[in-house]
Image (cartoon, rainbow, N blue to C red; front, side, top):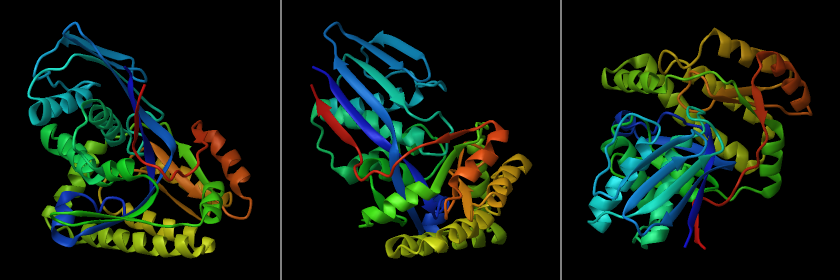
Length: 340
């Protein structure tokens, strides 16, 4: 028997960062995101020899042990895999399981596309499929969040787990005690146009997201007015972007992205730097009307809105920075699991 799963990565089109607990508990957050045709994959094959083997293909990291109730969680590339197993045993099985777990992600760690949280959702989905766990979409997303943020104490927000689980274009509302996922019925024509005009660019710059997220959280807790007001504008941007995409007002999309980017840079130190600013300004001079960095900032992927057939000129101008343009399409389906 082979159990497989896949969950899509996402781009955040507006509101990114307002899903941090420090902000949502006080003000409530709102994010517009969309899943794309890049995925995290997980495969489980049950074993009958009392052993556990974990292999991350993209990171080329392995871990093998006897089947025990709790795996040692160390700060390595397999911390997510181990943390998920420990929670599943503790909450659902009550006893060790023997298996091979193999994973792969289409984007590198620190991409800003939600790769870590999406991997958690994919692995959790595979366990749910295998063990027939009584978990719906909201349950899986919330459990993935708890594993990362509570069990493993990894800083970050909530949008990635919900985006990967639900899939599609969603307007998400974050409150102190609940998350509301509002799926948007966006015209296929509008989605195709949005995908055609959006250039997704990997800066290939490493990111210190933990420090950025911790700074942003501290700014809220310490009532840093500049940072909090910037987050309010980011939340407003999510609403503006939702209306523009639903109505097909494409001329406004670049301006809304730029409005959000100018605000995002004020949320915390380290979100941008002179090199990233140079990339952004180069894209604008070549025909893009706006853009942003994906995720917390500091590096990873950026994307730019390039209307009126300016896509080619923007891509050409970005070549001098040595990064990579990634082709993608928007997807409508979230976590998918199956058994062979």
